[in-house]
Length: 221
Image 1 (spheres, helix red, strand yellow):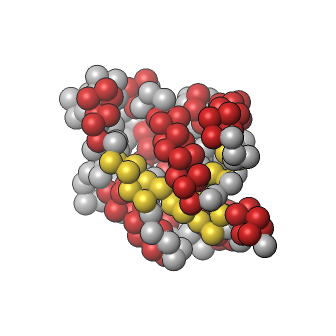
Image 2 (cartoon, helix red, strand yellow):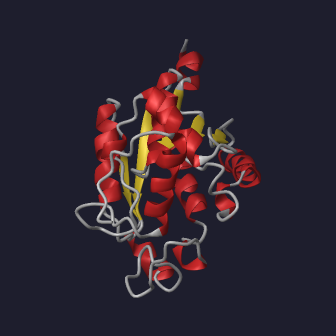
């Protein structure tokens, strides 16, 4: 019985966005006891953390918020997500990449999993991200899983349940699972509503449109 209970615990990297929220709801539907983990890495979009808290509460969980804000000193020269002086764009471009971000998050998630006795870690990488973000690709998280097992001597699994799926497909699945998308946050800025201009907002709009689902998000434009 103890082993069975361990198998049904999971850590979910919960950013507060629609992708990770859908993963969290998917894990809950699969019967997992979820342990969300959320990161402050100095990002401008502090509403991500607020969104993650609300989503976790809806799932009957509390998200573990990890303060990595000191990493802003490393990231500030590389990405507009932490540096307002680097212009945002509606197109994908290098300045929106946070170097090795998922590896940093997954490292903490592995440590958290070991401490709570969870054998499974899920995060929200999906197919629409894979061409642009190396740490969203299957070969990355499979390699990271091997490293986690070597580093902990635990049979931990690391998966992106929607790897290979389009963001629009993930949105449709989220609707099916009852994800409260109105509580999620995608924008790279910190306004009262989504800006509607940044790459993340543009992709959010497109995903809902392609899914044929009403977008509950409030945008400036």
